[in-house]
Image (cartoon, rainbow, N blue to C red):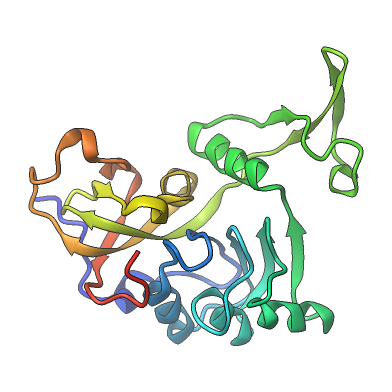
Length: 226
């Protein structure tokens, strides 16, 4: 019988290894898998490369992981905000690396990884510092930059409900990067607000099918309700 539910967040992230590329869902606090991240801090993996929309909020979740000294590099779209002081301080001290990627590009790089594509050309960032060292091409008279797929060893994702096969639904904007990160990682680990019985989720409501999910853990009272 297929049952992808794991008893605790701690058990779900137990095999995340040093130096792993970890995709972390969330748009600010919405959809951030805070409990999985805090379990990863307790687990002890370090030298991580984290892919996320932003570089952490205040001192919880991703910011807490960075403050604990576990993150070597962040790949994100929005590293700077009024509540990202942890990353800002670490970056100024030279203790963390940054690769800044436009938001649409980071989403498409993740999607390309999940779809098995070798990369794509985009006009975004052409002629800027972000295009330095990358292949460029003129297509229909417009400059384009070649971007490679963005694969992850692990994805930590927050969803709303999931069944034992790993089929997932999301709560409104908390969906954000979750579905494409599930597709782009070798091992996808998901925290859900509630467990659904098999067959309870309407097929048309399932956003992420279980084939992309390795483990699910139920966290009914998560730090953020979204």
